[in-house]
Length: 139
Image 1 (cartoon, rainbow, N blue to C red):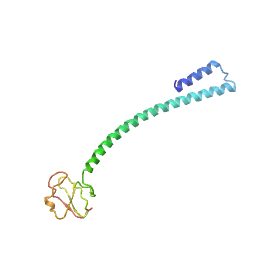
Image 2: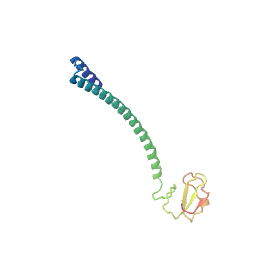
Image 3: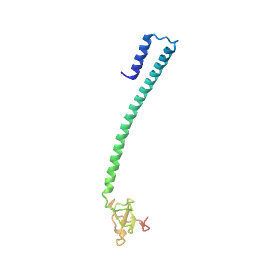
């Protein structure tokens, strides 16, 4: 039996007792039953809200799982680059003294050794000639 039903049952029992509402005991029991009824209604409303919020949390959890799946897939792509790269480029270099070039086709930052001719570099990201604007200030 739910709280609202129990409260109604108690009010029915009290009505069957035919309590005298003009006496203190009758007034007290009547007011207590009103409070119990109000509390039962409030608790049932809270239970409904809690159930609604639990459903919403489950939806958010599922959505978060989708987002995590996308993010972890992207992180795995980054993990494929060689270890030690600190310049956020796709080549995986670990020497910040190298020169950097921005691919003219895709905008990817490419690090290269100064012994190489930047005009002959192939971008590892797009596979096209990376010849473009050289950046030697190592940002």
